Length: 31
Image (cartoon, rainbow, N blue to C red; front, top):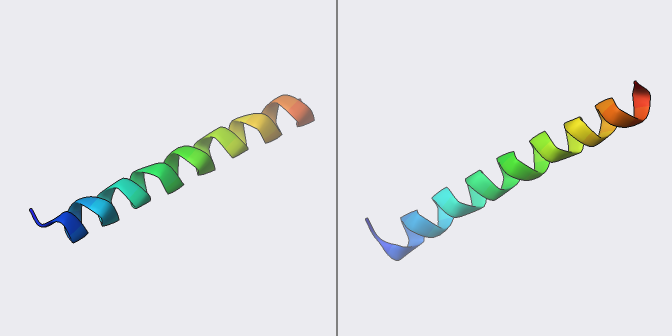
């Protein structure tokens, strides 16, 4: 694995985490 590849994977993981946490927040607000 190159450093660039590792960085891309980390970014995808972080983006996914942010997305899930945001949807959880929305669910708590709405319901």
